[in-house]
Length: 72
Image 1 (cartoon, rainbow, N blue to C red):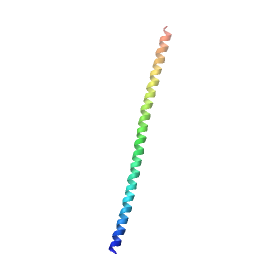
Image 2 (cartoon, one colour):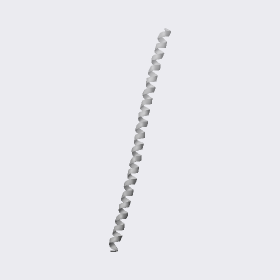
Image 3 (spheres, rainbow, N blue to C red):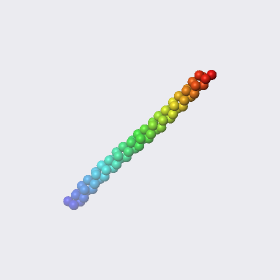
Image 4 (cartoon, rainbow, N blue to C red):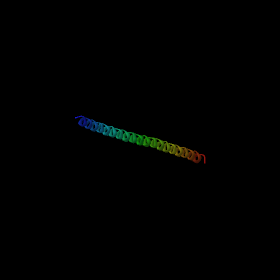
């Protein structure tokens, strides 16, 4: 009787441990996905800034060119 109870208790502990392990794995996966998403957003922001800066430089060159052409 005691042996059977110990066996059942051990089985329950194993089940609970497996559930905890699965939960931890899902949490790790979710954190990894969130980290990847944050990195992608940061990269996109950086790229958007670079594109905007490039456009600003181009506009300044066009303005300068137009001023030079007018004064010639």
